[in-house]
Length: 249
Image 1 (cartoon, one colour):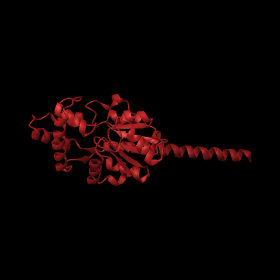
Image 2 (cartoon, rainbow, N blue to C red; image 1 turned 90 degrees about the horizontal axis):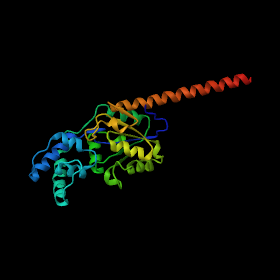
Image 3 (cartoon, rainbow, N blue to C red; image 1 turned 180 degrees about the vertical axis):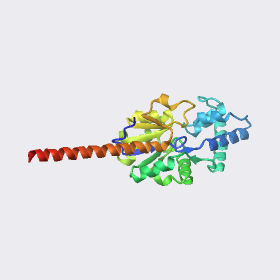
Image 4 (spheres, helix red, strand yellow; image 1 turned 30 degrees about the vertical axis):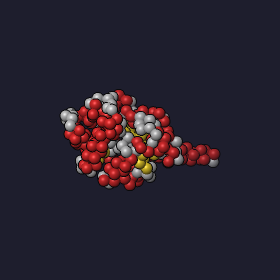
């Protein structure tokens, strides 16, 4: 059970949590391989290799191994072709997961600050959020280029806490991969994961987040439950105070 008492802000991952970008990424990967003259790749491999930023993804695609790498000249050539194809795509098939808009609106109405902490580039993350109409919900967007180290490093969460003027443990991280879980654990904050995230083809439950939801909108329920508990506590406190006053009389 996720307890959100003490949570003052929420950090989100982008790809595989808020937005399904897999089709656009697969398109760019296939275009890159075609331009270089390499054979096509199983589309499912590309999805399983996402989550560590574009540079690592390109190395994985070109080497065809999750822990693979290629010489720098080949990487640079592949990166140029990949980014060109990705930008040409203009996020044509990027789409919000079901429940994302509802959750963001609910949290915004509650005046809970939201920050995007992603291994995407800050530029592309801002573009995707703007195209899909949800950029206004976020006070800050922290991409991999805005940080010393990307997730699983906790740098993004530490920076988010600093910008908001709160303690890192007062954040809630919402993501979908082991990188999100490890970053959250490193700063001592709670972490909720979606079941459908990009996690190298491995069930996110094995990473032991504080909770796993099948619909991201379910996270709003935890904040509602917390509000109800707080209301009950206030009522009980008022009742005890009134009883004490009456007894003194």
